[in-house]
Length: 147
Image 1 (cartoon, rainbow, N blue to C red):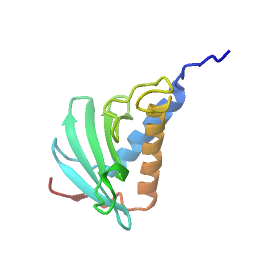
Image 2 (spheres, rainbow, N blue to C red):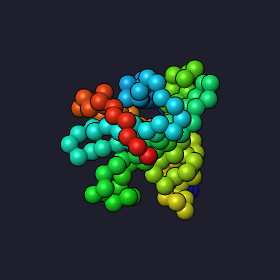
Image 3 (tube, helix red, strand yellow):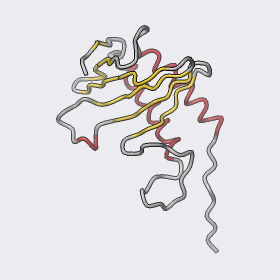
């Protein structure tokens, strides 16, 4: 008998990751910026990223993170949208690559071949990406860019 168990997110671990992501993003983001502003930085030689503030509200903000390297195919360039919750001091990945709205869990297998814990994996990826950017010291050199 093959019983498929549904994935149950570990909320404590996810909350810790989201809190860590918030602190990391706040180190990369400029102190004063408005909706539509973009800032570009290099995380290492040849790796360029753009942060763009898509929307703000009293307690939240939506930031788009895109990799700007033209020599990489589009599908290999990082692309995320991250919701910042300022009151809770948490940052959660809402959109990643081709996934428009991340669900807390997915049945597996599924037509899109998402992992059962896709949302958790995307938030862990953001944590690793932030550690990489901050460890290489380029994150503090945020420069305004156009577009």
